[in-house]
Image (cartoon, one colour):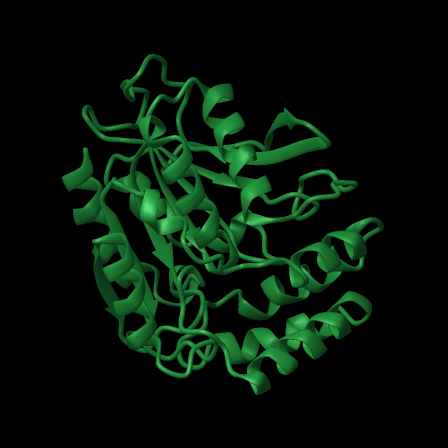
Length: 286
């Protein structure tokens, strides 16, 4: 894997941080070949979920680059190494950042993968700018889910409000999101998330994400590219993860792969199983 350094793309309202495993940008309407990238492969852009950082993919990226793929990981507005001060943290707003990043790197076509909150983002880009998207991957995402009941709505609203003022709750919640396998650096990583949310300017971003609509209905209708739904069988965010995965795959006319034992972040807890599901899809869309 090539050594990466944090890079930035300027967008309206601030800067978005990203890493790029390639030695240089691709150009033209299709992905070119760069150092360490297999000929004919399509770049992959990985988006983290709500209140997370691009390093959530730290254990998956080496597996993808070892297979010859160019991988770009991107921080979200107001989080990670991206700047604060944004006023819109919606999936649709993040979609414009993805398009800006692809334009900045000269990438004319890519596979987009979104976890949790940003599943809606990659669906939005695929619907609005189909010429840029070779395929999309939803990783334990919220798009087109079964409607929450009154209790779930109240729980989300209460916890969301609390997270704005008590970031440590997010660190504690990570234990629930990794119900089985946890990476060796789990404690350090979740401590880093809490520290990030305590930094100046992060409170507004937290409020923006927890109050945002992570599962807008109807966006999938515009998607025509291939789609893959990855879902952990033990994801506590969904009473029936497989039922949600079936619903999403049907809406996108795609297919699903269940990650046995996986929680809300299978790319961190089960990186090899996630790569095993993702790599054949990347080969097909290329």
